[in-house]
Image (cartoon, rainbow, N blue to C red):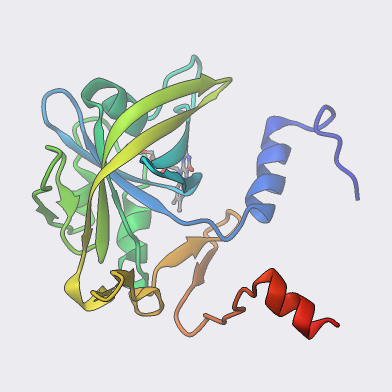
Length: 212
Ligand SMILES: Cc1cc2nc3c(=O)[nH]c(=O)nc-3n(C[C@H](O)[C@H](O)[C@H](O)COP(=O)(O)O)c2cc1C
């Protein structure tokens, strides 16, 4: 079936994209407003897009309703220029979803989800203490595009629980992290536990030898 995106609605386009750009990592973002009030929400329009400097990108839509008003996370990041991306594992899935509820202003989603924070090392926004890893970020730019925006952030510090680090690289013991990914919408997620398989890359010389 072919979908000409000039002929489908934005919601239908969304349905198609979230089914096909998957699994997606989840950036569980902590941010604060100018008065220091803490906010947490998950975003799966997320990836790293550079390493030198280390840049992450997050797509944040508008709040439901009329007008172009970015979600609290986007507003906070514009105002303070700082945020923390917390990694979500299986144990934290339900708490993460609780923080996606559109609570009225003044409600601390982390309190409701029963989560504690820990201080960050470089930015003033705290991280989620129970997260297996966190990326401290400074906003590089926010690019407004239509009814959404892409936030680019430079990672300035990375926390990883010792048990998930192989100091040799250092490498992340990603198979033990049990991070979850977002699949489609409708509450769909994917586990990474016992799901890894390896396809080693070969050099051109090795490929030639194997294919002669
Ligand atoms: C797993 C998951 C992924 C999400 N990804 C996004 C996303 O990429 N972009 C977005 O705008 N909203 C996304 N949402 C919805 C926001 O988390 C939700 O609108 C939240 O209330 C925003 O909170 P805030 O206003 O405090 O920033 C996602 C929700 C869930 C549960």
